[in-house]
Image 1 (cartoon, rainbow, N blue to C red):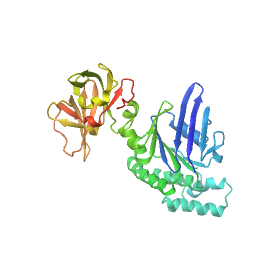
Image 2: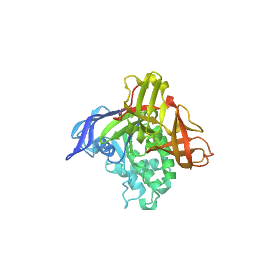
Image 3: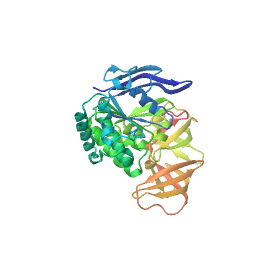
Image 4: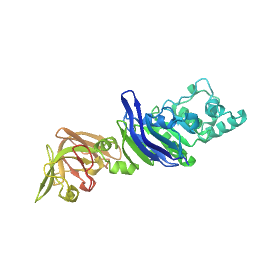
Length: 362
């Protein structure tokens, strides 16, 4: 078993708290992503699991064994870095086989196991080349082959696709997901790219300022972000967030913004515990907005700012007061012309957040 447990782990560098009281459990065989913007603590968390950093407080367990103070070589983990960290003076064969060499494995077995790993990753014909003679995608596969050659309990990936172009990144994403499924090795994957995390991981931990702010499946963090930070970070484009004020009366319930008054009477059961005049934030995904030719009770007026045809769909950006919102239209025929327009909100898919950023439960 290679379950990974972080129990109230904190890492402090001087006066800076890089990882702040993090507790997560990563199940055996799971593909788990640490997602967040630069500086949020995700790479430091990965380095703590690897043993490259020591926690200031808390415990780390791998496979039920506490490894908090153990060096990396005693943790049975393999790490793939952003820059691949291949030795430039060595052949690809020697690079892949290096983890076995330092463990004292015989030369014949090193060559056999390194060749097998390379063949599995479709770079068996490149074993006599050096890293500089390989493309970025080939170097990435060589780094992965080096990580799997000694069959570790855990794979740790630190933004391994960030140096690849868009096409290679898409191909590598599929290759990594297939490989992890085939090997069944517990994998922790650090990225700032929410599309990568959504596509690869079975569970995602979203981090902000050293803290884990939400853990869930890709579907859970996308459909029900617990804070406006998660809502604004997950999705491309992200969730639209419109500041507004709640108006409650005998005739119905409304959200009043600077330029709109939206009838949200159908949401009344979810508004219990809120009071008239309370400041809120309306959250709605771009795909849950549709353009309307006229004003309706569930429409928001705006000025069309930009229309972006994207092939099978179209992205329309509108200016609503001082806030820009996006509507994703599933059509290959973009609307013609600019000017005033209305967007209709699918209220059953809309979310409400308190002014402080927490989701209104309902």
